[in-house]
Length: 161
Length: 421
Image (tube, rainbow over all chains, first blue to last red; front, side, top):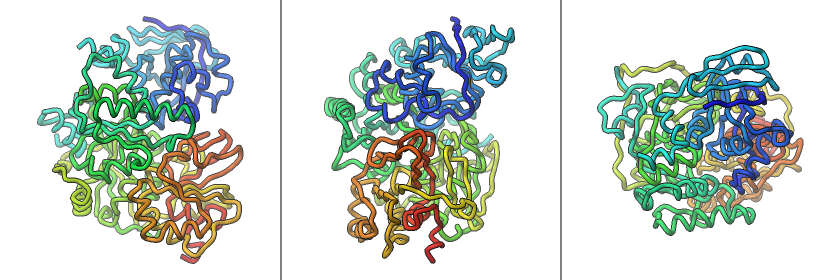
């Protein structure tokens, strides 16, 4: 499985309140949430994002609230993967549970800029920056999580057990 | 190798004699929690599962506290969805307006969590129950759905950081000041994926409400959970509120900690977190002149009776500054009633504050106290992210009930000592 797209770049501690502000949580439909994704730190994100695009951020991405609406909004925006130096733990769980691919890779977070075109091979964990001609090795998921991702989320994983 | 408090609780819920940091386990759950924002998403996920109802109708709590009393039609629909599910599944612990309180104040008060429990909640501040010596942690809606269906959740066993609290806290130092001090010291990801275990002789001086405020904000340091050992005060609290049997765990002497911090509580000063991260802390003598438009005293962090008593002590016989909207929100109906009976509500209203029914409302920018562009609030809540309480260009300063109340009186961020207290 591979992802390819243009990069939207953010800094440290992108919290779930800016990924999807609470004022939109009263309508949890994914397409509605996508309309407001990242609105409070990147007002044009919803307008600019293309299917397959990739979010790259520094440390502690997704900190704060447990709202699953945050990875849902990102996934429904068409984003194919989030790469970060580190993720906040609830966001990490939620992303896996809903089938939004995420990869921890500090080197990639540093070596990729906004607008770069990036390809990710989820099987090998390799991240290719096509624009700069560089390559990074992302952290592969433990086997247990790979099973959840292969089943396209926790619910299917439990249904299949 | 010995185990931490958290590791012992997890081992006991996994049927293993020992677990190690990093190990993936599937643990039995004593309680699964959701609110009006997260439960509807979980209910949608659970409907996709091949299961016949919930694993145990007595071990699920659905607490409609965020956008309630229903702030708009969409919120009313979310609550209706959660209520229908609760009724269909005969959920014992379903709470809506009239009975409801802010979930993390309500559940301990109702005796639904005791020491030794494993609790997941689709709300990040579920870590609050560590004050009782339980393992509790926030998860998302899908985990809540799986938990409601199976009574189990997967965890990676966390490593831990030890915080040794020493001596008697200085004047005006509450649990909120201690946890803000800690977050300022280790940062918003300083305990990422880890347990925060609080120990030391200083604990004896901390009330249960102080402890709840501290474990509540473990998530603001990225922590998986925060936990206190059980002492006489915890036992007394649990006996007063619950009929359930509890199990006390203490860390082994050779338990491994990634770091140990010693904090002299007698040296601390009231602490305020500046926008837009809880780690941006300053002691009260370093805040400068920060004029404010609103004060919020409440939330799952600081809406308990002792918080209200402290705020009332500061506000009694005084008037809130002209132009400062002061909103006091008791966290549960029981606390609200107690505040009325103790005369605290009267003090707040006479001082010019608004007192509201329990709700998470303003803390997350839901309703009941939203900030306009450029406005500033001092709040006893737990997050001061961009746009948290309203407009993305508004500002939230996190503080203790004592500092929030004093700030309401002066109209700028202030220590109660500025009022001669």
